[in-house]
Image (cartoon, rainbow, N blue to C red; front, side):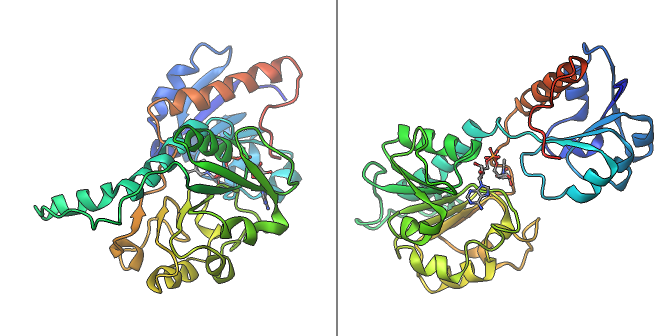
Length: 307
Ligand code: NAD
């Protein structure tokens, strides 16, 4: 198809100002403009956060997120709409966020922040604080996020194991297990970190059985998608002290409802789906868009094509 008009949909505003991305791409040999829902029909391609039915009329949709579970793949395929995503850029951001969660728990920093709100001078019990070297983190999913987490935690002296479908080794991981050994792999770790996409196969992968397999002193970290976890089963495990705690960036319902018990748990860190945030996000995404505009012009296949 011929690309003349690229729209930056206003929904990207959840992550960065749309005008920043439009300005960053202004030197491309096509028209790039910030658009709202009324302008979609004028575009050949859109860069977006959310899905709109009107996108079925354009030729190419680029998701500024790595996860594309919100887009209807079958409808895109039927209408011949190309879908590309932003995987490949969230390794260091999410890796550092996960390292932050682990350091908060190990060094009890979350307790200090909570105590400070109450102007309370209260030290941890003698046996609460620990250091990370010698602990094991099991990272489930060894794509961009998983590798970024492994590299960042490895730098902190954590032993990192991974779970992937093939069970083949991955650089940065001390040991890899195949999917059919998930329960054994997580049973062996002080930290379990979820980095798989949400698919039919991974929906509720972490259920009561998985939480029962984990150590009672283990922390659970989800930076993938909320529905990879059976959230009521996680809440039950936390309330029963069958886990030490959890750091959660994603939830079955977002925003996390005000009445969720997760908000009030001392050993739970809630962040509002922003593990990959960085002031460079529009540049990182823009570079993928730019590369694909070039590839389209050269008749080469799209980078990060999903549909
Ligand atoms: P990616 O495509 O680079 O990696 C995903 C990996 O998961 C791939 O290696 C794939 O083979 C593997 N995988 C898929 N299904 C699997 C299964 N059933 N069992 C084991 N492994 C499986 O994607 P990414 O950039 O690493 O992102 C992964 C997911 O994380 C995204 O789909 C998105 O949902 C989520 N994400 C969340 C945030 C956030 O802000 N919290 C940011 C980026 C991505």
